[in-house]
Length: 237
Picture 1 (cartoon, rainbow, N blue to C red):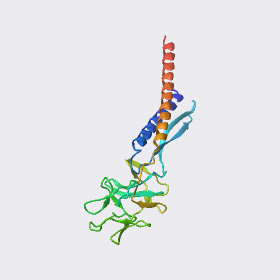
Picture 2 (picture 1 turned 30 degrees about the horizontal axis):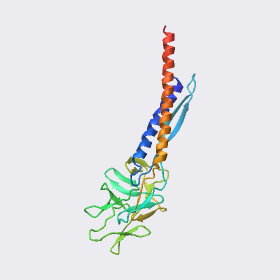
Picture 3 (picture 1 turned 90 degrees about the vertical axis):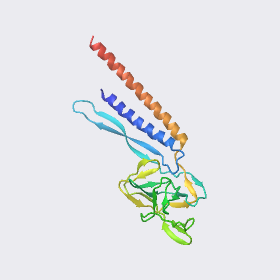
Picture 4 (picture 1 turned 135 degrees about the horizontal axis):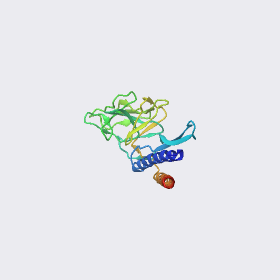
């Protein structure tokens, strides 16, 4: 296969990856706290000895949109939304994870948990515990959670350490392989939920663009295959 064929094949593979990402964004357009993803393409050019250089393009990485999602006022005492940067830190069987989904509840033991039952961690990394008889908690401007006049915990906001990356591990949970660090700029609002920051119309338009680009690449590969077949038939006669 000629270099142009390899280039097209790697581009097709990248377009398939981008189509999967776009489809996942559209599927999560109504998921609370979801962050839209994008795909970054990179080109690799290698000079082959005694032959033309070989260029390949691939979807090398994904990006995570940090655009603020819409805030919906619910009035729920256990509904929290983040305004600005940062994520809630939760404890899962696979380790600590970050999320923007702030629809919480109480476990049977009095721990503040996500809808999936994962414990929410405070600014110091300890589980947020509310005594069963404390009543509905309130949130102060500095993130202090209190009930019955007693401070219980300080809600914390976190993100990946400087230079670190965030990896989606399913739904609206993100992993920070390099560790997490506190965020001071964000603000937590009680009685609100943050919606997905996916723009469905933009994602659908992008899906159409990716599909057309893929079809164009496939047409080129088909034409190249037909040209090679005809050349082979001519030489073998």
